Length: 92
Image (cartoon, rainbow, N blue to C red; front, side):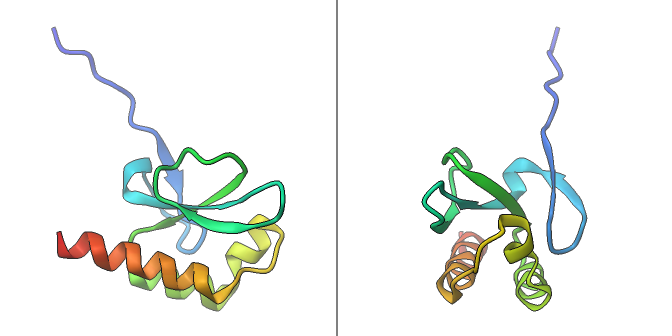
């Protein structure tokens, strides 16, 4: 008897599509207002999910959706970190 586990879904802030949580990258704003990429998905703070595609990151940057979701200015480094994580996973 196998147990069917429910797969948690999250919505990409850039594209609006729903994906399993493991196929997303979380960007989190801490209480201090620092924004960082959360690869583990467990950091405390306000989070927003972006799908693991360079097109989604470019769309998020163009529309400035992370700024609206997290209610703080997003440093350029965050977008670069997102692209690094995506490129690293596509190589493996």
